Amino acid sequence: MTSIDPAFLTGLGAVFSIFLAAIGSATASAEAGIYALRSRSGFVKSFIPIVISGVLAIYGIIVSVLLSGKLHHATVGDDGSENSTTITTTDGYRFLCAGLSVGLACAASGYGMASFIKQANATSNKTSTT
Image 1 (tube, rainbow, N blue to C red):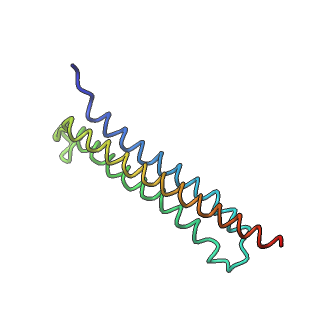
Image 2: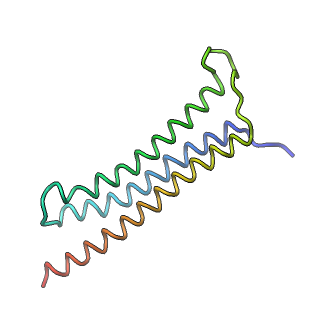
């Protein structure tokens, strides 16, 4: 049985982290934008959900950069020599799981925020029409 390349697993962790976090952030930002346009409250208060959903994307970027740093040090090394640090298969799976956990948490959080803001939009729309 051949083992999977740990660098590939680390790269997948970085990709899943940023991709899923961006999906969660975009989902929440879409509903938050509608809320900001329809909101009759203050300017700052209506943009708070947009800022919070943007923070979700930042979480994914941070973890992706950290995992990419691990990948870079494994191939080039601090002193410029090739393969000065090796990533084991166990480390590769750990990095994949780290990227998946952050990405899925941000996607779920973005979906939850979008659902909540969607309900707020629906109730504010009902009260404004009556």
